[in-house]
Length: 67
Image 1 (cartoon, rainbow, N blue to C red):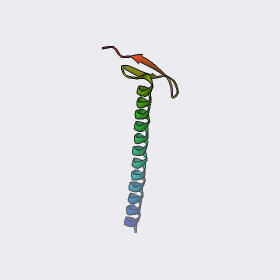
Image 2: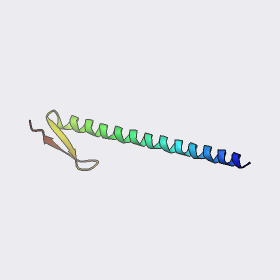
Image 3: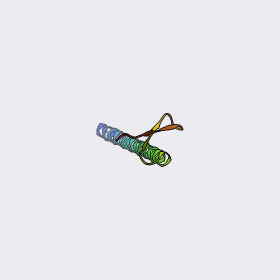
Image 4: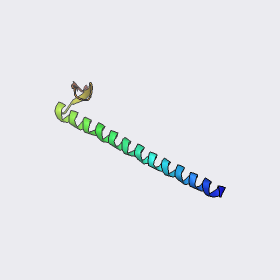
């Protein structure tokens, strides 16, 4: 009977760990997509030869790249 409780506890622990790992991976992918989108938008607005430096989520500054 004790063995059944231990196996059940182990399965629950592994299941919760698996769910937590998936949530973490999805969050990392969303963060990467947001950063990529921000870089793309900054490059589109600033143009070639300039780099967008973001002050916050809504404002950026275009800086000229030095050779």
